[in-house]
Image 1 (cartoon, rainbow, N blue to C red):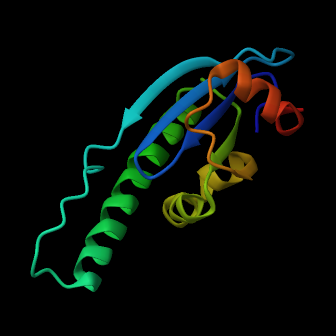
Image 2 (cartoon, one colour; image 1 turned 90 degrees about the vertical axis):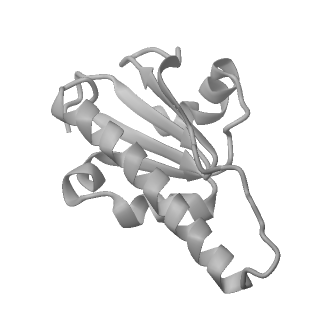
Length: 133
């Protein structure tokens, strides 16, 4: 980890995500990227087995988690951040951890099991202050 670089905070669930940058010594959350999940509309067709729908949803969540992990890895590789804080509900946090490669996992300093996707940056700063220290 590179302590002089900003921290990136991924705030996500299975349907949307935002990456914020927090500079060292600051509590200002600056939006870096926003990711609406393209497959978030749940289209249930009559006649589809529940297990097939569940399987498709899991695949969609894994794909979205991979997309987010690729963005975080790019930020690390481009030296835009030195460490990462993940904030997601427990289920989606599991998807993120499953698809994160070893290098990305080394740079994850905190994982917060909360769904804060609807919070504004100022509220995020208040609730995540202790996780950024």
